[in-house]
Structures are given as structure tokens and as C-alpha cells.
Length: 429
Image (cartoon, rainbow, N blue to C red; front, side, top):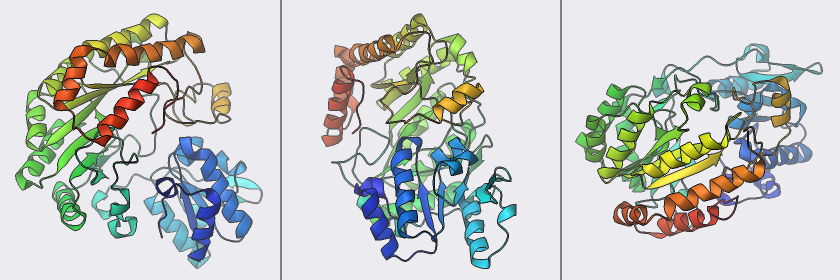
């Protein structure tokens, strides 16, 4: 049984009650770092009500925090990294009563010590991974009235996320390590079949492709878009997780249009060459400018992701990033404050910082958690608010948004959130 407590807005106590009614042999909890506190409360609830029931935690927070998380929570096991095979191996071992010590990716307690044999091997046979869509009940997520996707705008409320690949070979120091650096791809024919099935079975009208880096291989990205266009599923496509902006050419943009891509986001992060090198993103900013402007001019709703507050970043470098974002022809821009999540290279830069970030509570993507920059907290917060005002309150940009963005309740909700971000620090909608 799969129960999405976040989607259903269920408190930990209610989740525990419903979960135990199912009489499970094993309970698994997953969470992003933003959700760490309620996830740990949920684990505590299960162990309080059923102490002998094995509980395992996995996902982004457990992976980033590492094996030592077992010293801070009552979970019996952690599944770290790419977890499908590790979880199956754990279930088999618990059923058979042996073999836990050799399971890669599994952290556990033994004799008062935490044991961890190391990360799992990357899954190479990507098509062996299949989503049980029937169990997930996609229709439960089709709503305009609550946020149901990364994308802040929408052509349809009947939308679902898809992966065409996993992993990213780039070594950005602020990024997660869940899927590793090895880029692996699902078979295109099978992925298109899945799209068609979801369209026919649940009347899905929009797909959000959320690969770590969809266009690592420009040829593969083009082949995927060609096949989508050829099969004509009649659905819209959004790239909300951020394409690599300096790996885009004119042909890719034309193929995006033919495949009915209506939104594309590009992860810029910083317009400072020094910061680009320091965080090892090393984005070609001039090529990025061309890609963003050409995509926006084609009529695709185009967004950029920008970050402020990198280690040692000066006020001039932050202003350069803001001005770069404003100078583009894109419709949307997000200005995030750097989140030094546990497990990222930035957070692990020195032992003191690594320990400190493990004591922090990360509220949501809007909030400042730890300022590593060369400016004080007040200045950083002020710059971010100014960035939203300067970007969105420009008449020509407002006109572009009105012309190209879908006109529906999601656009109104996004506009309201932007207005709030221009005057306040935290918005979660």
C-alpha cells in the first residue's frame, strides 16, 4: 500500500493509524529534507504503536544525511541512494532471516554500532524499473486548487511527472547525489508507450519531465522529442526541473515545439564567472543567454532558476545574477537562497559546517536557513525581494506572460505567490 501523506494533508497520527490498519510486514518512509521533521515524527509514531514492526527510511533526506541519521531517529534501517534494489533485498532478507550485512545501500544497527557497507551500484537496466500507476492512483493528484507539480503554471490539471533518464555527469557542488553522476536512460519506445497508456487510462493531458539533466546528450534529447512528435500523444510537455542552457541549439527548440513543449526552465544559478567555476557548474553564460532568449521568443513559457548566497559571494556578484536574469526575454524567474543541504559538497566543505547543517531545520524552498555569503542576512533577504520586484513588475515582461502563459487558476496562484515574495521571505503554496 502506498499512502501519500503530504498530498492528502494527513497528520502523523492519522498516517500511523491508517498504516497499521493495513497490517504491514514493513513500513517505508521517504522524505525530502524540507519534510524531515514530520517524517521523523511519523517514524516515532509507528515505533511507539508497533515497536516490533520494521521501519525503513529512504529518499533525499536520508541519503544526504547519511548513515548517522540512525543515531537520531527510531528507524530500524536506512536505504541510501538509488533504493529500488536495496529495498527489495531488505524485504527478502527480512523474510528469510539472513543476509542483511551484504546489502549495499543499507544502513542498520548491530551491537550498538551503525553498519553501512557503502552505496548501491547504479542500476543499469533502467527499463527493469516500472511504476505501479494503479497503486499510485494518479487521479488523486489532478487538482488546480492545490500544487500538484513543480511547474507553477499548467495547461491542464491532469498532469503527471515522468523520468526519461537518471543521473547527471556534472559535479555541481550544491546538488544532490541520489542518482549519482552516471547518466542512464530509459528506452524511448517503452517510455512513449507509458505516456500513451497514461493518456488513455487516466486521460493525462500534460507530462512534466523531471530528469536531473534531460539534455546531457543532445542527440538523445532530440530523439526523444522526435518520437513524441511522431506518436502525437496529444499531450503537453513541461521541462520544469531545469535544462542545461548551454546544451541547446536551434534544432532542439524546434523539436520542443513539435512535441508540444509549452514550458521550459533553465538552471542558470549565477551570472558570476567566479561563482560558476567555484560551484563547478561552469555554464557558458553567453550560450545560456541565447538559449533562454530563443526559447522565449518561440512562444514557449521560459523560466530561469537563480541562486543567491553562495559561499563568499559578494553583493556585486549577487546583483550581477539579478541583472542577468532581468536582461533576458524569459517569462519567469525564481531567485532562491542557497540551501546547503546535508550531503552536498558545499555542506560537507568542512567538518564544522557539515555538523551544523545536520542540526538545522529546513522549512521550505523560500526560507533562508544558513547564509554562507559575504553579506549579512538582512542584505541578502532585501536583495532577493528586490529581484522579484524588478523582474516581474516590468511592463514588457508582464505583457509576455499574459501573451504566452496558460490562463487559468494556476497562473493566478503563481502571480499571487510572486507578489508575496516581493515583500516577504517565505511563500509555500
